[in-house]
Amino acid sequence: MKHMDMLWPLFTRLYHCHTGNDAYDAIFDELCRVLELDGITLVLVPPDVSWRQPQRYRCFDGGACYRPLSELQPLLYQCHTRLTARHWFCSLRVPGDQCCGALAVTLKGGVGELTARLRWLALQLSQWQLHFWQLSQWRAHSRCLEQWANLSDRPQLMVADDGTLLFANQSALALLRLGTSIRQDDAGQLLLRGQGTAFIHFGRMLAGRGEGQQVIRVPDTFQVVHLVHLPDCRYWLVMIKDPGLPARLDIECLACLFSLTRTEKAQLLLLASGCCANKRIAQRRHVSPETAKTVQQSIYRKTGCRSRGELLLLLQAMS
Image (cartoon, rainbow, N blue to C red; front, side, top):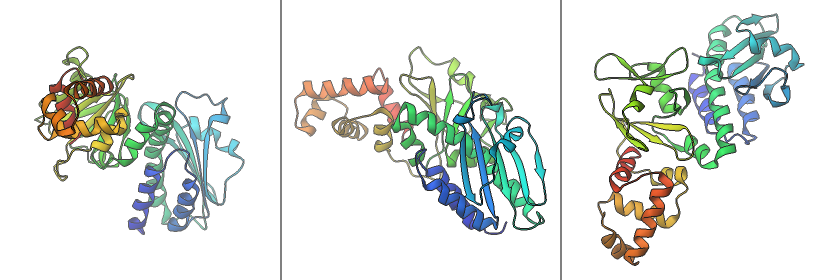
C-alpha cells in the first residue's frame, strides 16, 4: 500500500498518546496528508453509553471537519458503509459491541484507488477506539496503568475475570492479527493456543488457580504465558514471552503498576539478583534486618503476593 511506511509510525503515535494529549489533531491532520484526503472526522461512543448522551462522545478531526455530527448518528448503531460524491462513511465496531464509532472521510476526488486504503484506515481506527476508551478508564482509575500500557514493548494484554479482552498493546495486536498463538472469539473472549493446535479459553486458565493467587504461570501453552492479577480490581495482565526480546527485568514497569517507592524498587532488584535473605539484603542496603523486613512486607501488600516464591514468579513474569 502506498506510503505504508509512513502510516505505521502515525498509528504508533496514536497508541502512545495519553488521553488528555492535544497531539491527536496533528496526527489526524497527518493521516489526511499521507492518504491524500480532504478531511477525517471520527466520533467515538464509550462503552455502555446511550445515544441520548452525546455529551460523552469524543470527536477527532483532521483536515476539513464533517458537520453536523448528528448526521453520523445512524452509523453508530447500524453497521454499514456509505459512499457519496464527496464523502465515505463507515461504522466502527469491535467484537462484543463493547463500544462503537463512526468515521466520515472527505474525499479530494472519486474513491477510485482509495477503497483499500480507506478500509484499512477504518480497521485500524476500529481497533484503536477500544484502546482509547481503556486508557480513559485507566486514567480515571490510575495514571500508572495508562503509563504501563503506553511504555511496554512486550506482548501484553489486559483481560477481565470473565475472559473479556479489554486491551492489547501493539506487540500483542500483531499476535492477534496473526492468530497463531492468541485469538479473540466473536464474543470478545481471549483464547490462547495450547501445546497442540487447540485454543484454550482464558476462563479455564483461572479455574485451577489457588485462592488469592496473584501470579500464575500458565502450563501447556504454545508460548510462555504469565497471568498477573492487579490488586483492588478485576483485571488480569497477560504477559506473553517474546522469544525475539532478551529477558530483562522491567523494574520501572513493575514500580509503575504497583506504585512502588524507590526503596522498594532497590530491594526488588536485590531479590531479582539472587539476594533473598533479609539479613543479606540489609547488609547490601546498609539498613537493619527489621527495616528490610518492613520494606519486604510493604512490597507483598502492594503487589498482592503472599510469599517470596510468588514474588519471584512475578519478577519472572515481568522479565
